[in-house]
Image 1 (cartoon, rainbow, N blue to C red):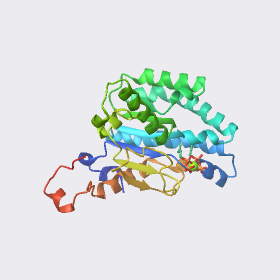
Image 2: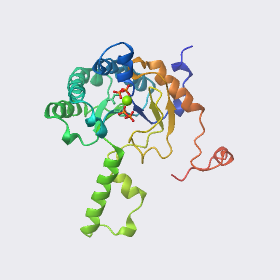
Image 3: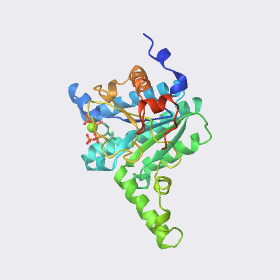
Image 4: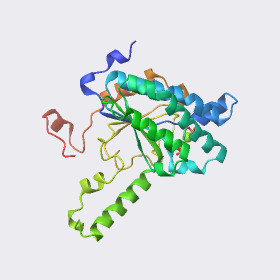
Amino acid sequence: MDLKSGIDVSRLPQHVAIIMDGNGRWAKGQGMPRIYGHHNGVKAVRACTEAAAEIGIRYLTLYAFSTENWNRPEQEVNALMALLVETIGQEVKTLNENNIRLEAIGDISALPAASLQALKKGMRDTAQNTGMTLILALNYSSRWEITRATRQIASRVKQGLLHPDQIDEHTVQSELETHNYPDPDLLIRSSGEQRLSNFLLWQCAYTEFYFTPVFWPDIQKKDFWQAILEYQQRERRYGMTSDQLMMDHTPNI
Ligand code: IPE
Ligand code: IPE
Ligand code: MG
């Protein structure tokens, strides 16, 4: 069955976020070093990016490196950073051909110089594209993001630009890394783990979760489309009742 043709394009998630997990275990299963898994994970990145762009997803966010991932063995961290440079360099042409804009969230200033340079070049070279936005979460963690937002709000209060009573959800949202994007409608995690690992905690308040046991390097387009089909079976109630939704009440969120 062609999964793609079963998708209702009028009810697509606007924003899909993915926790790309299982590279290490996949490699171990092949008797290979973890880094081999990361290299093979690039194919799955390409597959999901294409699968998303083909059906008209507006935003695709990929969790590529968490703040906590710095605690991994130095050799693995270095390999991941080198892979980032290599991959972005290779993919810019394809991104342009597909009208995809590359952006990033996270504390990218702390990335090694070569990785930051490649990332910035990739973002610059695709900035004019108007199709899907591909967002890489790099040196990202939600607690870092929320802490930073809090610091910025506090500083505006101290400067007298903002009164504490004026702080609402919009104030917080506007200081987050994701302030330009809608919240994810669908979050996918590969490798069977069912946790958020410090990813988009605020933004996932009403996100639908989809977990698959498949290790990231084995993920194919069909897995992405399967997740979209499952998403389209869900009823997003935002705290309301099913009957209210039938009567077309607009959720207050
Ligand atoms: C995901 O795969 C890639 C990154 C976190 C960078 P892992 O490297 O976490 O693979 P497992 O979870 O150890 O199998
Ligand atoms: C989450 O995966 C981070 C990324 C996918 C980049 P991890 O493999 O680091 O998460 P935990 O440690 O299993 O929670
Ligand atoms: Mg993992």
